[in-house]
Image (cartoon, rainbow, N blue to C red; front, side):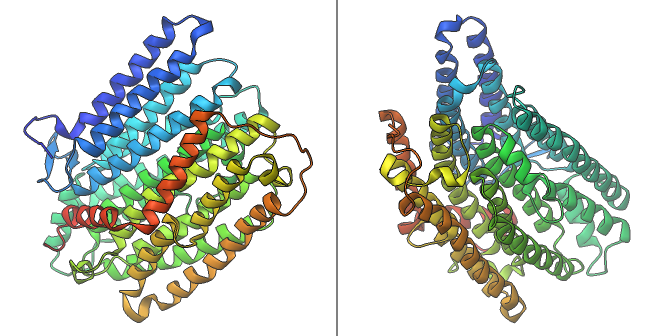
Amino acid sequence: MDIAGPFAPVLLETLSACGAGAVLLVDLFTPEARKSRVGAASLAVTAILFLAAWFGMEAGGETATLFGGSLVLDGMAVFLKRTFATAGLLAVLAAIRYEDRLPRGRGEFHFLLLSALTGMFLVSSVGDLMSMFVSLELVTLSFFILAAFRRERPESVEAGLKLLVLGSLAAAFVLFGTAFLYGATGDLTFAGLRDHLASLRGAPPSRDLLLGLLFVLLGLGFKIGMVPMQVWVPDVYQGAPAPVTAFLAVGSKAAGFALVLRLVTTVAGPGTKDSLQLLFTALAFATLFYGNLAAIPQTNVKRLLGYSSIGHCGYLLMGLAALGPASYYDESAAASGAAAILFYLLAYALTTFGAFLVVILFSAATGSDEMDDYAGLSRRSPLLAASLTVALLSLAGVPPLAGFFGKFMLMRSVALTGPAGFGLLVAGAVNVVIGLYYYLCLVKRMYVHPPKDASPLPVTGPTAALLYALTAALLILGIFPGAFVTLASDAARAAFGVGG
C-alpha cells in the first residue's frame, strides 16, 4: 500500500464521489433516447474503483491516518474497501438490468448508488465517533431515497418511509451513545477510548461509558438487522427495488459490522470483555433463531431473503461473541472471530448478488416475486434455476461453496473460545439445518413442481456471463479459500495489533 501521498486514505472515496458527479453530468447532457449511457458511465466508475481497490492497494502496509486520526487506512479498512468495491460493481450491473423498470431518474438512481458506495468506503476507515456517524448517515440517507425510488409503487414508498423513521431512531441511539462516551472519556477518537480504558488498569469502566457503548451498539444493530432492531428488514426488502435490496443487504450489513468490529476491539479490555461476550452470545442466539424460523412460512422470495438476512446477521454475531484474548489470533489459525467476519462478509456479498440477480431477471419477465411462481423454473430457464440454486445452497452453507467455508470459519472461531462457546456452536449448527430446509423448499419448487407457465425465459449473453461468473466465484471461494482467508486474517491482525 503506497501511503506516500497524504490523501491515500481517501483515494477510493474521492474517486467514488467524483464519479457520482460525473454520472449526473452524463445524465444531464444525454438525450432521452440514449440514457443507457448513464448506466455505462456508472459501470465504468465502479469498474475503476474495483480495480483500484483490488490491485492498487496493499493490505500489509503500515497504517495511514488523515484529519487528526478521523480516518484510518489499515489492513481491515483495505479488506472492507475491496468488499464494498465488489458489491458496488455488482450493484451497478444489477441496476443496469433493472433500468427498464424505472419510469424516470436513471441518473439520480446511479448517483445515489455511488453516494452510498462513497459512504461505505468512508465507514471502513473511520477513526472516531463523529466521522463514524457522518459516513454512516451518508449510506443510510442514500438508501432512504433508493428504497422509495419507485414512488408509483405503494410498497416502495412504504419501504422508504419505514427505513426513514426507524433509521432516524437508530441515528438518535448512536448520537446519544456518542454523548455518553464523550462525557465518560473526554475524547471522540477510538484511540482515545482505547487509551482511557488502558488507564483504568483493569478497574471496571464507568456506568456512562458502558451505557454509551450499549446505545451505539443498538444504533448499529439497526444497520445490520440484529434482533431487536430487525423489524424493518422484511418490509424494506420486499418493497425496495431489487438492486437496492441486494446492495442494502450487503452494504448496510458490512458497514455496520465494520463499525462494530472497530468499537469492540477498541473497548474489549479486561473490564468489558466478559460482558461483551455474554451480550453478543445472547444476541446471536436470538437473531439466529428469529431470522431462520421466521423465514419458514414466507411465500415471497424477497421477504424470505430478508428473514434469511437476519439469520446471517446471527452467524456474524457468533464471530463477535468469539472475540477473545489475543492468543486466539495465533498465526496458525485461519479462523479467528474478526477474520471469520471479514471473510463471511465477502462470501455473503457474492452469494446475495447471485441470488438477487436471478430475482431481478425473473421479476422483470413475470412481474412476480412469489415463490409459487418459481415452480418449474428449471424447465423455463435452466441457467436461472441453476444459478439461484447455487446461491441458495451457498447461503445455507452447503460444501463446497463459499457460504460453507464462511460458516466453518465462524464456528471454528466459536470453538476456540472453549466450553463457553459450546451452546452457541450447537445453536449455529441447528440453524444451518433450519436454513437448509427453507432454501430447499424454493429449490423443490424450481425442479419438482410443474410450471404454471411453460413459456421459456431467455437470458441475454452479458447477463448469462455474469451469472456464470458469480457461480464460479462461489465455487472458487469455497474450494480454494486460502488466499482470501490469508487476506482476512492479515487484515484482522494488522487492524487489532494481534499476532506477527
